[in-house]
Amino acid sequence: IGQDEAVRVVADAIRRSRAGLSDPNRPYGSFLFLGPTGVGKTELCKALADFLFDSQEHIVRIDMSEFMEKHSVSRLIGAPPGYVGYEEGGYLTEAVRRKPYSVILLDEVEKAHPDVFNVLLQVLDDGRLTDGQGRTVDFRNTVIVMTSNLGSQMIQEMSGDDYQVIKLAVMAEVKNYFRPEFINRIDEVVVFHALDEQHIAGIARIQLQYLEKRLAQMDMKLAISDAALAEIAKAGFDPVFGARPLKRAIQSEIENPLAREILSGHFAAKDTVRVDAENGRLVFAKG
Image: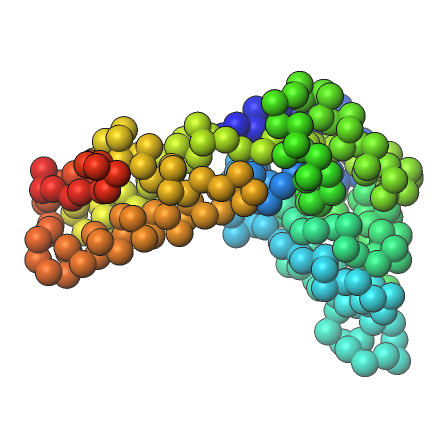
């Protein structure tokens, strides 16, 4: 929602791979996602895993803030012979060996030690990596997504500007931080917009579908009016944190009072829960 350019850029890169036009000796796709917190970077990764590999279980998520020290490279690819932890294998290499078809999400990549980037360069260039035990791990069937908050402040300040103008400004900051050979090996650098209240309403509708599914398991239906949806969007909107407060808003405004109503026996199986807004508050009624 609200990230049409980002979705288009990722879709184009995946189409190139599917059509057999991209280098077969490199990963299926490699992306650097830039943008403020709570704008959908991780959600797009989940959608990618769903589309390509039919399950969100195929996401290997690694928080790169855990790899800030020089010695942490051995945690990624495994310790060399004679060192502690040699038998265990590396976090990244073992994950890909077990799930060769996966989306690898490297969160907050800018926090990693420069030596970690040397390892990533090899993956992005050759599509393979040799672990601490000397075994070659194949990355050609993976999609590598790196996320970063670089330029977040700039994206929020320029939120009304043209996408290309924002991207140029953010790329200037990215080039100051990352080495040129690293940027040049990435398929696409994708800049995410800051979200506005209109987008949050659309995201709220998607989030409420999960609640509808849970109620459907209890043979109940959920009907939410546009006024109630607007009220939830208003409660869950924060220009700094994006869509992150939305889940809390849905919990406090809908799930908590609804749980009380269900446990008190007001709603039961076969009922339709109607949610509307009155005087800035949500009201529940039996349909």
